Structure formats: structure tokens, C-alpha cells
Image 1 (cartoon, rainbow, N blue to C red):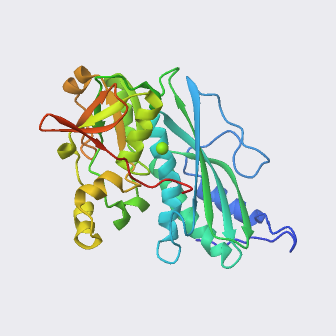
Image 2 (image 1 turned 90 degrees about the horizontal axis):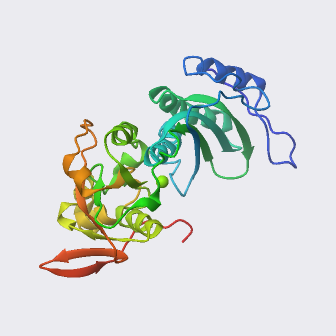
Length: 319
Ligand SMILES: [Mg+2]
């Protein structure tokens, strides 16, 4: 890649803006991506109106919290910063269109870091047909933080919400879970294809993506819907990574599947009739029914005819 410069504005401001050379470099690299009418390099982006409704989400990842720059490839970090937003978009049933990127760079090696992070961002943008509408780059005396805002569209009143699950609905998960820390968390596969197919073939009553742990995110979905879940815990698909991790972690594969975060699979509810009839063609995201929504709040396991309360566990931000 061509080098570019990041300039400090003044020692007092602790914030700097990027040189024009970088914007030129970035514009060049974005040329093969879908374009917005006015993108990088102006004071603001100008976007075309969308059909249906607009949808937006933002997620920030920070060195030492969501990744460790000494250990993880910064290109993977850039990729992840986009992919986690795409996972949120999939959870809402939306179609992603463009991103805005904010990089907060540590002063040391800022140019090199920005280039590596952008390699991953551009890779994800190319893979998912996103335009890079704009962004901001600053340096400061702090850890690398990458914030991506994703804009997209969804058909009028068709967005999947967390709050629509109804008693009797089937609960499905889009793939095996647990142990993503072994590497999958850096290269999550957003379930956009699955989301689209579901939107076209069944009535999804609620959805959420698993960012903080299957049980914690299911609990959030249930809380938003004012319902509970009765789970057939043996049906929860356990990823091989969870089994590998369990060999050294002192925890069981199930515990990893139950509570590990950053799987970025979808949890979806739909009527039992829809779940029984559903056929989706996404070989990489097999749907598994793991239980049903019940009126009684909380997460429950039915074993030998008795109900046992399960406690949700996972990664709670800010705790
Ligand atoms: Mg989410």
C-alpha cells in the first residue's frame, strides 16, 4: 500500500486530521466499491434516498476491550469492525448499503496502523458490496478504537425486532455456538443471506444476533418481548471450538456454547408452523430449533417433565 500521513493539529488539541494525501489514497482504493453521489473528501456525504425505510447501526471496538493489538492482526480488526455491524443489520432483516468509519489512532505508528485497519475494512466492504461514504481519522494518546456506522434499508415496517416473540413460537439458532475466542470472533460471518431468505419465506416474529452469549442475548430478546423460553438444551448446537476450548478451560463445551460471546449467529423466533415448514438454502448457517417461547418469563429447561430455571450468562458490557 502507498504510505499516507496523519497530522497532529497542535500539541494541545490532541486531535489531528488526516492529510489530503490519505483521502486521495482512500478514494483510489474505494474506486471498485459501490459509490455514493458525494463520498470521501467533502464536508459530508450525500446519499441517494432508499426504497422502504432507512436503517442504521453503529459499533465501536477498542484495543484492550474487544481485541488486543499485540496479538491480533489489525487487518482482522478492521474486518471485524464492519462485520459486527453487518451482523446487527442481519438481525434486523436489513440490507446494508454504506459505512462511515471513525478511526482513533494511537500517536505511535498511526500511519501504519490506519493502513492495516483499512485493509480489513476495504476487504469487508468489497465482500458485502458496501460504499464507504465517509469518516474521520484522529490521533491521540490512547488506544486504537474503530467505530463503524452502517447504513442500510429495510422494507417498510418489515424490520425484525427483539420485541415480537409470542408464546408458542419456535426458537431457532443459525449455527453452532461457543469458543469463538479461538479465532472466529475476528472474522465473523454475518448472516445476511439467511436473514434475507427468512424475510422472503416466513414471518419472523423476533430476532437478535448473538454478540454477548446465546443465553444472555436470548434473555434480552425474551425480556423485550415480555415472554420466556423453554429450551431443549441438548439441541443447542455446540461448535467444535467450544469442545477444543473445554479441553483446557475447566468448563464444559455446553457452558461455552451457553455463555461465550461473539458468535454472531442469529437467534430467531417464528410460529411453530413456519419452523416446521421452513426450508432455507444457506449451507453455512444451518437452522436448529432449540426450544419454544413460553408465557412465563425467564429461561427454562424441561427435564423429565420438570421445569428447571436456567440462568443466563455471558458478556455484559460495562460490568
Ligand atoms: Mg446485536
